[in-house]
Image (cartoon, rainbow, N blue to C red; front, side):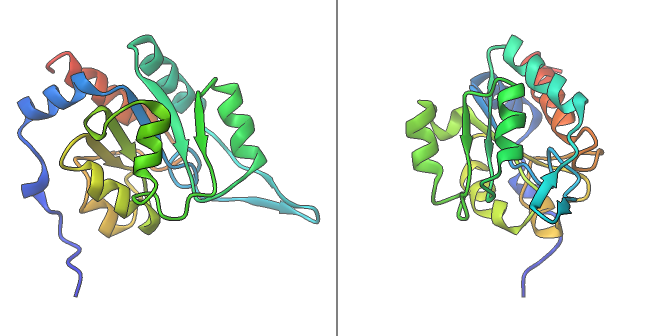
Length: 181
């Protein structure tokens, strides 16, 4: 049976988290359930709308000013996601990725960043493999409304829900850690 209790022993002490934050070059994020609230509006033509938070967009900008890039890693291959990435001027969108952990080597090769230079925020079971892979090296987080197994895997549990500022909160957490706060 899988334990849903948080694995606090996986979280390094705050000084180690600050060191990790100083190495971060890319913050990777899932889309649905992190940048959106997980809802999708459908029309007769198919998926048409997703709601994104402008506060999360400012989180991307604040990271960029600190020399940290952002990229989306999502199981979907959606024009809506590509449009949001274009608006945010993201260098990479890894779409249609079903096994994110298995795709980590490709992400590292494409971005030029090692696992110790990556942070990831995700919310659902398809994020667990990349969270587990990055946990010993980089930084990880989940929105407040993430699945219990995801919450048990991360360094930072956001107070905000997906699509309601969770990405921004993670960005601010990283920036504060870099300052030693």
